[in-house]
Image (cartoon, rainbow over all chains, first blue to last red; front, top):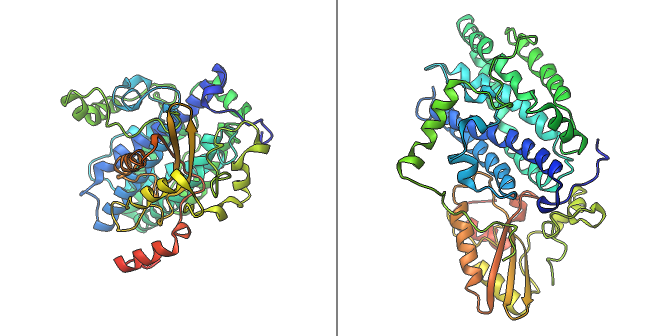
Length: 279
Length: 149
C-alpha cells in the first residue's frame, strides 16, 4: 500500500477520493473533539492538582489536533459552524467510547479511557505517516510530537490505581464498562469507503490490522496489572462510526453547543482567510 | 526569491512527488533551511519581513520571526492589482489559544506594508517547530525575558 500513488490537493480530487478523505478526517477529528469535551469535565475535580493540570493539558492537545483535522475538512467548503456548532448529532462519526459520561468521581474511568484511546491513536497516526494525501501527511508529525506523554500519564496512573485490591476492582469495573466501546474505534464507517481509504493509500494499515495491533498491546499490558480485558467482547449497540450514538451523546452535544445557541450565533469567530484561498 | 523558493509548503499539494519539496523534508534535508529570516530579501519583500519582525509572540517579548514561526515569504506582482504576499507560518503548539489573535495580527501587519495589496497566510505544520528554529537574537531576547533555551 505504500506504493499507492500520491493524491492531488483538495480541489482536484475525484468525488470518490474526496468521500474517502472526508470520511477518514471525520473519524479522526470527531474522536479528538468529543474526547476533549469529556476530559474538560474533570477540571477542578481531578484527585490532585497535578493530575487536574495534566488532564486539562491533554484535553487542549486533543482539541488542537481536532482543529488540524477540521481545517482539512474546511478545504472542501464547510465552515466551523457546519462542522461543529450546527452539525446534527446524528452526523458525527466518533467511536462511542469518547462520548460516554464518566461515573461520578470515578477517576479510574478517564485514566483507563485515555490509555485505551491513546494506544489506539499511536497506531492510527503511524498508519498516516505515509498517507497518499499530503495535507494529512504534513500534520501527522506535529500531532505525534504532542502525544508522547498522554500514554505515559495514563500508564503511570493505571499502575498506581491497580496496586491494591480495592483500586484494582475499581479499574476492572471501568474496564468491563469501557472495553466494548473501545472496540468501536476500529469499526468501519462504511465498509466500501473504508476499503477505498486503504486502496487509495490514505491510510497504510487496515482497520482490522490496527485493531489486532491494539489488542496485542493493551490486553497483555492490562493483564500484567491484574486486570482482565475481554478481547472477544461483543460490540455495543451504538458504534458511532456509522452515526449511531448513545443518548448521552445528545446530552453532551446540547451542552457544548448551548452557548452558541443562547447567543444566537450563526458563525464562529472568523479565524482567518482560508489558508489556501489565493486572494 | 532568496531563501524561500524551496521551503516546504508552497508546493503543498503537489501531485508529483518527484517535484514536491515535501518529500525532501521526509529525508530530513529541508529543516536546515529554517528558520527563514528574510536575510538577503530586497524591495517589498524586505519590507514584508520588517513588518513580520514587528509582530511579537503574545506571551513573550520576542519577534515571531526570531521565534522561528515564519517558514517563508513570497511576494508576487500582479498586473493592475499590485503586490500579493504569501506567508508560510507555523505555531509552536497545535492547541495554541492565541491562533486567531496572532494570524490576524500577521495579516494586518503584512497588508499594512506600502505596495502590498493582498496577503495569503498559510499555516503549515511540517516541519514541526522546535526550539532549534529560534534565531540567535531570539535566544538572546528570551534569555533577557528569563527563559534559557
